Length: 580
Image (tube, rainbow, N blue to C red):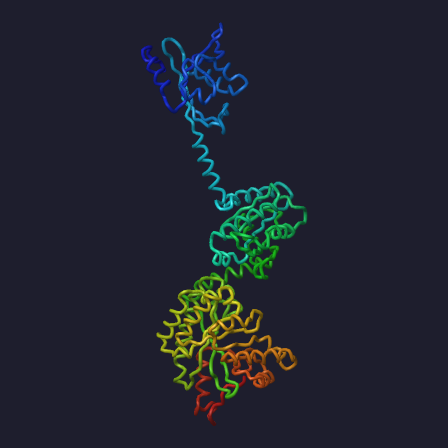
């Protein structure tokens, strides 16, 4: 670009007065043969000299930067030769500048008053670079723990898996989860929960090698990636090291928080998709939690099959209610003194479109782990009440018993659903009994007590199922508003041959009666158990010996035949249900 002579001074004034950008004007210094050997700073504003940390104006460039970065010299020579302009970004360290200055430069060729010049503008983009670096860090790291996030983990995992194609090696993926973290969060608050996650993350990180990757991928879940394991290593030793690295008790905000970690491991010697590697480790983690938590488990093909089965079960359950595939079967409960059916337990069955009729053992665990249990539980409640409402027409006022899942007890909608089911069906409240287990209420005893007291206020009965299975405590038993106890069936297994079992059953019966509760023996399979329970003072019994669970229509027929004055076989009144 050629600048008229009278514009040179205006350009110089503008450069010198520019308040932000570093601006310089340099002229070429040539030797006798016309070759450019240096550049002379004709003009330099204050910003340029502050960035440089030295005086520039009136000095030569190679002299100023002797022993430092002179990489711009050659491009500037080319600019003089070819004309035009040049743009680039740079990073440089100058005396007194900490950290290094990042800049964006613009250089152009100018010919004024017969002299060739290079005009340069330098804009400080240090803060912009710092902000970009922060955004990059935030995009790849978990803001709470500072560990890698899922995105960065997947990038490292995919690269590690790709390396398995090029070399013989073993890598491990470990899925770590803080046991009962939700309960800790709910009990102590999210501030304590967040601090706990930070402590767990730092503890796990400290147990790893520098080359290993650890990421928090959400909630209380951490994933560790380790390459180049010893040949034949399973990763279980590493899993145990990680579990041991987390303190059993963490002191947070003056509170002792008991901590446990479960770990699932998969080891790979051949490349697989990254999501499959994570899925295998997650499946092993699920197995560890199923085994009682605070465990480490190695992924196996059996787990894969179980995981696939669980996935298919979950998928089927998601649409089973909408498709009308659920049904209720009823199992009688009998009064030991009279032999009359006094109640029936409504038991869920799934008529699977391809597998036929499925019992709860095939799907109930999966269902109770999902949010779908709330909708299915509400359906069971409504169906059971509607069915029992018709039993008086058959001569029976039997109570219908409905099992509750832990999620239902914790649901704020349970009391409203019970009230609605009773109103819609017309069933008297005292003819509905809700069954709970000890383990379900222990996770939130105060909440469970409040909910069950609201249910009892409606007139509905509450039974404590599987009593004596391991959690029993008189302190909280007195707090639960239950109306009956159902003995754990394990006590009946050797009732006649075991003095201790008989003594325990008698103690439970006495305890129940002292508290004004009905005592029910379930799982009765033969006449000998029936006689023993009668002798021990049990009030009611239930089991295959007294009747198996049957469809609603078949149970109605049993009630009709057992009604006073009914003829079961055409020859006389039907006998009460006491066997078969």
